[in-house]
Length: 171
Image 1 (spheres, rainbow, N blue to C red):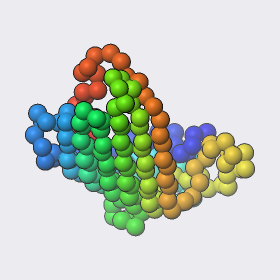
Image 2 (image 1 turned 180 degrees about the vertical axis):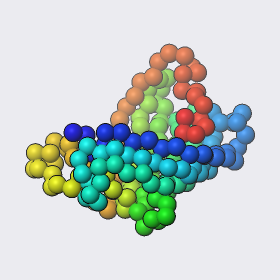
Image 3 (image 1 turned 90 degrees about the vertical axis):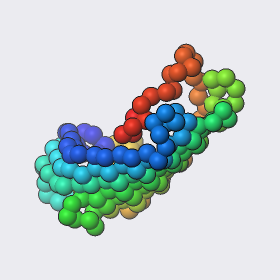
Image 4 (image 1 turned 90 degrees about the horizontal axis):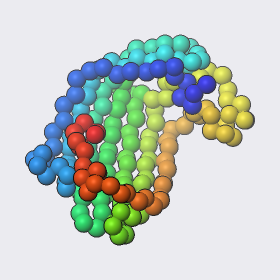
């Protein structure tokens, strides 16, 4: 049994992304706007609170991301809004922020935060979660919000070009 009650899920549809800054600057700074619209399908492990074992819905997403990389580290944030079409009341809004401070060559201090407003939990299983499932975090519970804060230390070694990837479409 999976945390999110899904055997599988997939999304298909067109997307468009625009960056305020030219691609040649994408390793140092980004301000992107990303929109996608399409069809999402689910196959559920157990019957959902909406009495479904499989489902197909229209969905669209809009994300805005800013990321700045300097010698001292990296700072970034993403705002994401998604909803089902035409059921716009079932939506999801998320704000994510991250900061990485370079302490010295290869060693960084990292801080990540996320807060979400959830009104689209259509995958929740119909039956109640047992206290064991809740205790060991095996089942997703109904909620209207979710948040987390993460901090840690990381060490990166290898090529100086290893953190450079294609930043387009969330890469």
